[in-house]
Amino acid sequence: MRKFKAISLFCGCGGADLGLIGGFNYLDQNYPDNPFKIIHASDINAKAVETYNLNFEHKASIQDIHELDISNLKADVIIGGFPCQPFSTVNPTKTPSKKSNQLFWEMARVINDVKPSIFVAENVQGFYRLNNGFYFKLACNEFEKIGYQIFHKLLDTSEYGVPQKRKRIFIVGVRNDIKSLFEFPNPTHGEDSCLAEKVKLSEIIKDLWPKEEKYFFSKRAVEGVKKAKNNMKRAVAQDINGQCLTITSHLAKVSLNSRDPVLLVSKEKELYRRFTPQEAASIQSFPLNFRFHGSEGDSYRQIGNAISPVLMWHLSKSILKILKKEK
Image (cartoon, rainbow, N blue to C red; front, side, top):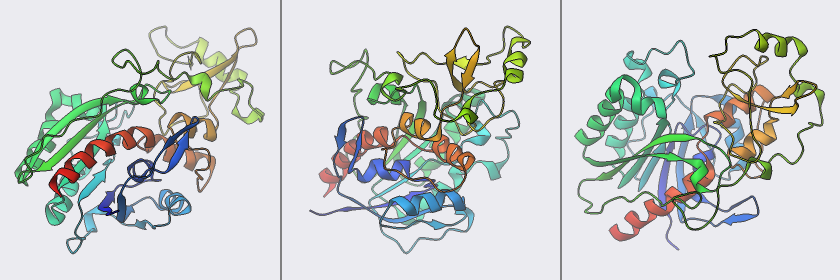
């Protein structure tokens, strides 16, 4: 079978890449191989690249996209979740107006050099809405200028078999000479789907009590939460019979004073805990055999910054429809 060539920018630990190529199991469901071959993957984060290289036969490289020149490569598709911190609603120090923070310019430059048939760019919901969509429109205009018809949609991982409410904006560009319209995958779970109910967090969290006490928050942390203002979102305990709030890169925190999801182990004893790295990875839809390099803090950051493999697997089917029509 012919394999389509793919380039992965801002590859991180490889969530999007795993989804693109397929061939993994998650919650007793198989996500078969897709006919993609990744010919280049890179990221500036050395530890994320180490994780990537633990899990894939093809290897990623440590590179700053500002210095990246792959104009000699030919590819059918480019994927990339350009860094979201400048646009994140949980980043109090964000400065999105700095052009150096707007890495979609660099992604557009690489896309223009390679001229793939299709590209997929991902970012946080805040990028879509910040400043009345100013930065989002800026990116779309740039992608249009370099010769692509743009399609975009806010997708929620919980609608695709993942027990996490994670909304991300996906921008898809189809090269202007390709006369096909991109269609985002239909939800497979939830109200807009006739297939299945949304997956519950209890599919991941089988036991509220962790094996190690280090995941519990201290009594001092709990007392601090009690003193917080009522209108502040703190100690956001998750209902395991529903879907988890967004897994972020901040899960290595040492305080309950954040908007990150936590687990309430015992209401009577006021025992709260953070998710273990393995639980966080599973909530993000990484298979159990996916390995992470570095400290637990490194793992949390890599997991929180990743694109959900299962969601990307569904997107890959829509990408393939375009590529197969073209060929």
